[in-house]
Length: 260
Image (cartoon, rainbow, N blue to C red; front, side, top):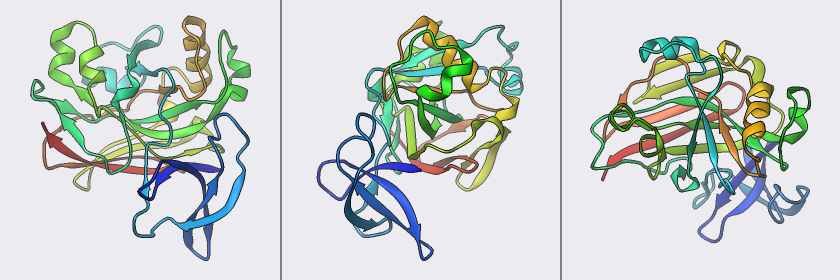
């Protein structure tokens, strides 16, 4: 099941993304599927209809939890050793944008970077959960771009500003509730040229371990998002670029890059 959040110019609504006759359409839902069973209203809207715009599929109720250096090759390209335990950081929900929304590089940043990632969307209140039981707390998965002000990351000594500025967390295009995250490709493209081609099987800490580890430190709420790390191949983006991130079997999301 693919759950999208969309607008046709009015308030955001939710829908299931279905296919019929080779064309995708939105089966509109009543209410927020994070807090009630997904109930179609009977209204159908073609996904490519004029005026339809996909939004970030979820606005985290409290937080986005990032995981740094979770691919050994990425840690190496940044001049770091792989961590002995998950390296966590937070991104505020004000950093979240959706498909086609602009990534806006702040005026204080001179080096911004893309990071394609698989993102986990939490579906139930989650605290002190064992890895074996993590599945029942996950609503599904989406695609993320952990945009980073790389110069601020180096200079600040912590990552709040570098990872948390407005527009630094594109999410989309929808939440897939059926994806198996163990063995899927994670990739990125800048202006159509591939820059990353990693695979979740190469993560140092897998999804069940990450959710369990994070839930031991902080309560995860419905709608919270976990970014699971980026593979090697990160690089700079500048105003005028269009960056696309994708997860195999889930979909892709593209955003233009602007400068404030």
